[in-house]
Image 1: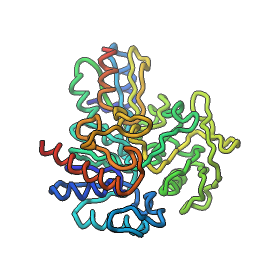
Image 2 (image 1 turned 90 degrees about the horizontal axis):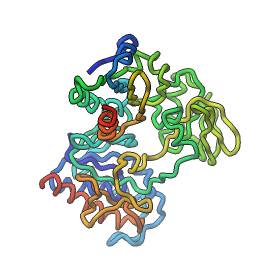
Image 3 (image 1 turned 180 degrees about the vertical axis):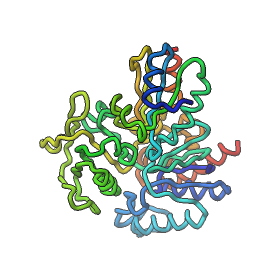
Image 4 (image 1 turned 120 degrees about the vertical axis):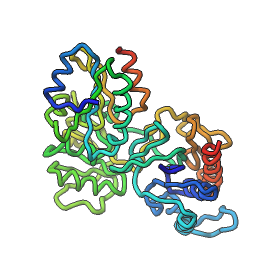
Length: 103
Length: 279
């Protein structure tokens, strides 16, 4: 489970692997609820995809850069480009579907 | 982790809670204040067996006392989001509650959305001031106040430095001075790439964010996989929905919208949830 700052995030986007990132904040109940799901997916897909989190409280710049205006928001990147975005708490299977379709 | 989470503190939810407490299950009831239940507005209920002539408020007060006496626990607030993963998790404000079975008893929740609302979700439309407020710091926002606690959320946004306008069909109680209130009911979210304003009864209020705060989140928004027909949740005789471990009771399963029917269904749903846990 990677906790991205701007530098590590930019680095991840330059790689070839699929990147899935969860924008969250500690004051956000729905984010806290989704957190364990993201962590479990990060374990499950280790080596296949880069799955991490951005704390929007600490990395406001990243949230602004990717126009995140609701949290949680999960964004998927392939070859540095955004390919999908899920706003709010979605059924765990919907994250799995995007991962499986893209891998 | 509770045995059973009940969403809704009206007759159906409270009957489910009492039934489940009778089987010694731990129960958490999540809902708006029981005084805000639509039944509270009934001046006289004459078709509830054995107790004719009561007001809706009197019935609710007794239902609530009964459930509390039976050992049900209560959280006042709106279920904002729901997750089916290792049981059920429900967010209320910034708290998360977990249960092994779920009873849906939210009453009639209107699902109709405003024009533009779905389109701009994630691009300026938000349902949670506590979650997303910080992302709108020092920017103009409109709060659409449709719930009793909406003024508090507007005050919170104001305290973050947002320039807040409060729009509602009804006057707001508890709104801080300095937050303009506009009475309006016909609303539409306007935008280009993201939200640029809210149209309220024909007048355009420019803003970056629109916080739409309803009394409750519709069950199908909480649980997209839930089977619904003509706006009512599909259940079998055990009040089981199509999702394992999820039961539904009361007005959300359809007509007649009567306390007697809600209590009966709630009772069955509570017992079925116990059977599911013991099965």
